[in-house]
Image (tube, rainbow, N blue to C red; front, side, top):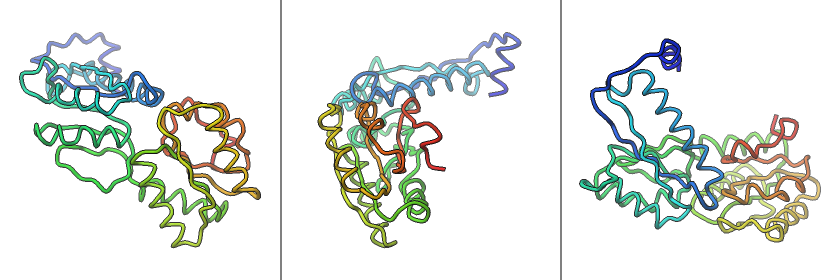
Length: 261
């Protein structure tokens, strides 16, 4: 932000007229921390930039950070605390969740208490709530264009792999329907439980992909959490098999030479 940069450069000392409390509800621990900590950092950076530029309508934004612990029950409990008037953790608005499972867990709480959740990542669509602002792409904006490109330039054979929860299952059902309509073939589809990261389990999926695509093909990878960091996920995968990964943490992205061109 240019204004934020200027305010810092000239040492602006703002006098705020009040505070706006913002809940930050993500997993700082557990299998999803590898993805969600980066979102927390981005949200806190944005808050700092806005405050350094004078705040929100003259008010200082105060973040209240809570750890969902990669546990949907904990997300629900914290959502209640963030949205219940009189609670010591009550805030004006919440930015939170990553998985659709966590979002669906807190959705009834935000609707019951008529509060607002900003959901910051891509999701499977097929849901609408006046209490949730969905900021990310849906499959028709992300997965479907990627599949169309892969079909046109790479292969008609696809292997679908994902974590076993709402988003990967729904996204892959949409991809299957798209491939059926456009003449592609799904040669395999496998899922990992969230939090599963053993070499044996992940390695078995990698071997199934290699066997399913002996002449090459394409992979739609909707794995989330620590499974993304397993060494056999990337090191054993043939470089000749392009992979579309919509939610890969930035630290785990493949080198450009192995990415889609």
